[in-house]
Image 1 (cartoon, helix red, strand yellow):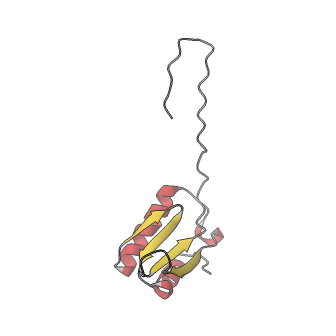
Image 2: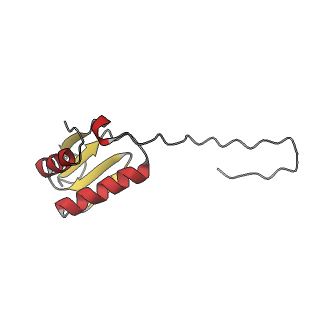
Length: 102
């Protein structure tokens, strides 16, 4: 979407983007952990989902998890994807930070 300039003094520009919701405190999050193989060329990944909050906060949490597990990963569509099966290690780390994990 591009911004259009108008010389009309009555023109009111309205941004159609949806504002991000504030990040919930760790104890109010309900994160879910799962392992996936399908659609990934046989590679195993650990997926953390159901994070409610800003993308920047999700990326910070993803970086902490990648450093803790010493693996690569990414943030896509509101989920943290870590390379390999690290469900127990991730669950322990998240619980130590105050997140309830299922």
